[in-house]
Length: 202
Image 1 (cartoon, helix red, strand yellow):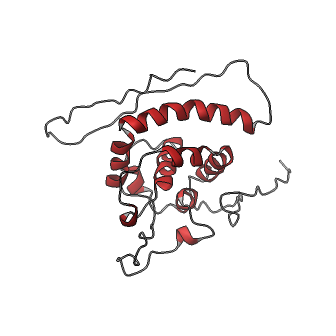
Image 2 (cartoon, rainbow, N blue to C red; image 1 turned 120 degrees about the vertical axis):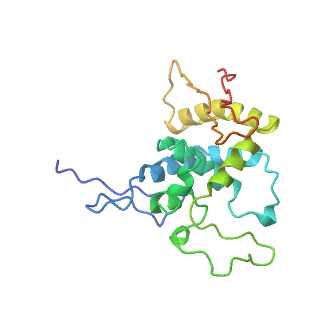
């Protein structure tokens, strides 16, 4: 319509620019904007400090922060199946939006040698796999982490108000649905069991 829209600068990765172009390099560019919003509210720092991560930190490939962001962004993009992480693992917008690394490092291939450098975790290449995302759900289901996630809903509501520069709302509704966890196969206990998260109150 003739307007000139400036390019927003992203705090989480200043090397990125959002442009409207004829080529469609990704259908998930909204993930970059969502990541910027999460960073500006500070909720990722809040979660990272409180989520219990039982993994050996010297043996992981994907840091907890990246896993949390992956889970949030995939759901925000309408991808609820854990297999979507495998299907979209090479999407450039999602790789940039999820990674804790700067510049175009998230798009670079991992070193040919799969062995990690001494004392350092492996470099992630793409989104986490479906098994890794499924283990994340398992870890988040611990008593301590479920309590943290309950508090995170209210914390994020508070932080959202803060980023609106003081605008106050008379009412705020937090709509929390069940988290469906589907188990494939006919092994014992493979029936559908939703994880109820409706205990949250404001």
